[in-house]
Image (cartoon, rainbow, N blue to C red; front, side, top):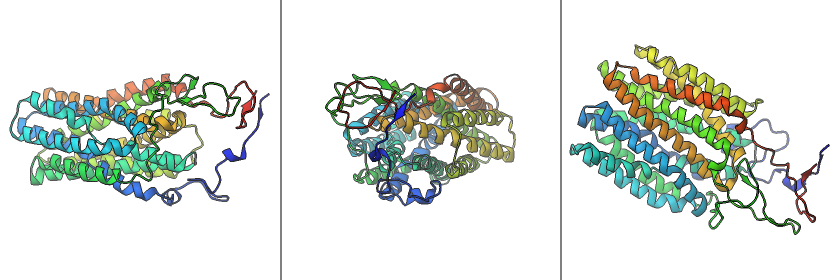
Length: 460
């Protein structure tokens, strides 16, 4: 039999950030948005990550305009996505260790310069290798504002029940950017100039990133000097105290996020979600151009993203009883099933309806995945964990953009929609097979030898 001793100080009280007051109903968006200090990072954070949704579409439309090939356009966009996927976790690690401002300030400057260089090279009809060379720093320097905002919620709310609501809110915010971003990029590239989308993306990244970096009061405390390896036992991403505990003091060391098995499973799931984003972007552009209505591209992608956004709002308003890892399996199965029908659509209305359905199935998986990160990973590695997931989406998007572009060039119109089908099916198989790794270990069950514990423990 286990006896449990609970410390009153370990319970969240009304004075703690994000704590629910007695008699309050389940957490909701209103309560979340009344959290002290939230708006200081929400508004600049929204402005700073708006360009992320414009980047791939702007590159595809610009390079296709200058080369006439969706394969070449997809390849350049893919290099950008792969570079972002490879460098995003490094950016997250640096943000955890040295602070978000220290990473953002040089990052947005490099990104703006690299994106403008890529624009000039494309308009000059530079060889493909030169576009690839410019695409590498463009992708590597993409500001990781979304993960940084999520990390700030973790600090602001601590262990509050509002964390799930915050994950839903962030998913809704992401999808709002994916509604507005492609619409804005498509409108600029088709109505103003093929280069206008990428130029605007660079300007918004620079301005929004600098505004967000200026909000230092809510950023997580840097873990500068904290060792990357743990000398104690490690479970589900939380470094255990190492050394003697008899004096009431224990040294906690930082554990890299990717050492957590659950994070690796989530990365595969988010990789599959990335194939949906990438496959949709290229295939919708090819479809609308084939029917002589390229301007509909942004509208159709906006419908897809709107489904995601509306679904995210609903998910955040529900008081879920099912465990998060079970919700992820069910939600991902629905996504794979919905994505399997995209390649059969041959009309604008049917494609819009299927896109809306696919978008509605993405939000539950994203929200649940981000919620699991808060449960699986220690705060000292949380930004890094979020960037692994963001990087996985970018990598899946990059692979999908490349493959879908080749399929659209070589096969029939709509062949690129086979990519989301395959990507989500493979990811679903992985999530189902390894779902037990998504179950967080109980943080309260700590067994240690020694005397003089200052913090009451659950012991056997």
